[in-house]
Amino acid sequence: MPSRNTMKGFSLIEILISMLVLGIGILGMVGLQLNAMRVNQTASVRSQATFLAYDIVDRMRANTPAALAGSYDISLTAAASTGTSIADQDLRTWKAALSSQLPAGTGAISRSGQTLRVIVQWDESKVGGQGAQQFTFETRLCEKNCL
Image (tube, rainbow, N blue to C red):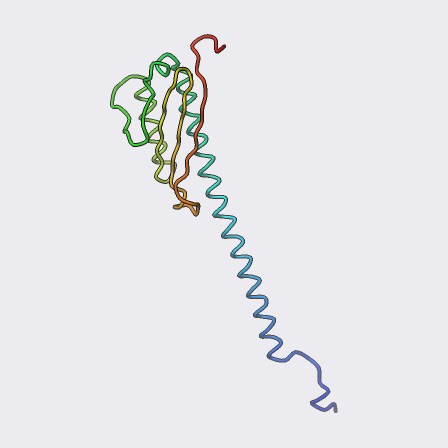
């Protein structure tokens, strides 16, 4: 019969250490997964902001005379007009989409001749980002030839 000193196998301390290493590994994987989800959420919000900027530009291209006349000009803090023109309806729809699809989302449109600047602003800290963010898009609208 072998003596106790020559028996081989795991001791309780070795099992506890392996459980500790396994636990630290699992916590590391959870941290990586949470970081990936945060980055994915901020990317989603930024993509939505880009889409909304292009949306209003497409609406202005469909109503170019009104856009060049300044009917779409609006500041970040202004509410859309309650009028019944196509421009007023487009701005109301756009401002509503900004506030519902982006955290603290708002937007502005300014015009300088045929050049339009669309600004979309939101608060990214609510989705794990770095606070207030802005996407600015400039385009040129022409009624006939843009030369």
